[in-house]
Each structure stands twice: as structure tokens, then as C-alpha cells.
Amino acid sequence: MISLSVHVLALSAALGQAPAPELFCRYAVQSAQRVTSAGPDGFSVTVHRKADPALTKDACVVEVRDRSQRIVFTREGFNARVHEDSGRDVDNDGAPDLIVGVETHRTRLCCSQYSILSLKPAPRVIGTFSNPTFRPDQHRRTVVWAALPFDDLGSDFGPVPTIAIVGQYRDGRFVDLTSENCPWILAGTAPGWASLSEDLWRLDGTRRAASRAETGPPSSAVETTRASATTVVLQMLYCGRDADARELIRQVWPDQQQEPIRASLTVAVAAALKYSAK
Image (cartoon, rainbow, N blue to C red; front, side, top):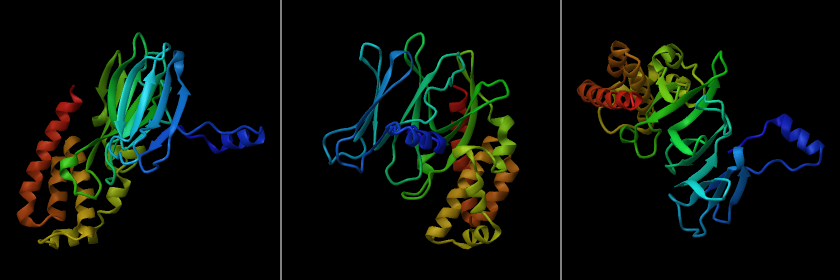
């Protein structure tokens, strides 16, 4: 979705201009939805809903067309959108890139999968990230902050546990910068979805104790506490803070569950490290 600042909206109103259309398709809106926006170098992006009102998981479509109106990229999902930072030079090659995404879940709190399309010398996907945030470094080169989701570690309706990853494209290669940013991530001060502030807030001493004492089927409150703990433990393990991760597991889960939890999260982090090394 391309969001306009309050100042731009106010200026548009003062000039009698309508604001730019929102590049967003929602599966829950069953009426016709179709918006096209011009992109850089003659490319265009169209977001639309399929005609069948009964469709859900593949109801919305995002399409990218080149100068000749040939479709060079398309994806489907519950919802589809153009990222508000689309047009930013994500791969730091001096040319703008398109950032388009779809939502792959309907009820869970993650994730929008955004594809980065580099347009030169030919359009190609250089990476796909969950809920990315883009920030410039001191040299005005783009740094990518994103969430790496673990669907199999979450409950059916609770938040999906994630690991925050940080990286930057350098000479056509994505370089993982997470380790040097771990202090900010674990302190809850990272930007966007990489922030652990809400998860850390849910892990106060009272909630940890209540979760540890619950040996039967967990209540929704305990499930939420454990989901946040899972995300924080995953991040600790990814950042090499194994002792801190073990201690948090001890504080949140009953004794008999601690070792299986630690083993499953260790396996998940090993898979994440392989992903970041690609």
C-alpha cells in the first residue's frame, strides 16, 4: 500500500486534487477492485481482485508489466499490495526497485511476503522478505529489516513466531548484518516488525511465572506468553545468546517441557542460519 503523509494529503486537498489511489486489494471486499500505478522505466503495477467473490486465499493478484505491457511478475494471496517504499533502491545498484507483496495468512498475525524486483538490466526477483522495513545507513545505502516466520511453531490463531533479520545488498549479494544489530533487536528498539518491544512487554515476571506453573492445556493468556517467549528465544539463539535463551525457557515452560522446546527451537534456528547463508 502506498501511504501518503498528512502533509501531502493536506496539500492535495488545498489544491483540489484527489489523493493517489491506494494500491491494495482485500479479499474480504468482494466487489471489483482494480488499481494500476505507473512505476519507473515504463513499468506498471496492477493490484486487483478476481471476479469470483467466493475466493479467499488466492482472491487478490499483484501484476507487474513491462513497457510492452507484458506481465513479468505475478503473485496471488488473501490480500495484495504495493509496499509504501516501492521505488526505493533496495539492492543499492543506483536504480529504483519495485516492492510488491501478498498476505499468505487470513487470521494469523504474520506475514506479508514482499518480493523485490530489480528492473535492470532485466526484471528479476532478487529477494523475498516477510514484513520488511527499509532504512538508509550512514552512506544512504538501503538496509533491509525483516521477519523470518516459523509457521509450524505457532498456534492456530496466535501470532507466528519470528526471527528478525537485518541485511544489505552489496555488489548483488545479500549480506546478513543481524549479528551486529542483535543488541538493538534484543533490547526491543529495532524498527518495524523487527521490534521485540511488544513480546518483551508480555514477558514480565508475573506472566512468566503463570506460564511455568501451567502444566495442562494452556489458557489463551499463557499461549500468548509462550508465543512471545518463543520469538524472543529464537532471536537469542540466532544472536548466539544461548545461555539467555536457556534461562528464558526455564522461566516460561514447565520442567518436563523445557528440553523438547529447546531442541525444537534449536533446530528452527539452524534452518534459519542456512537460509541467511544463501
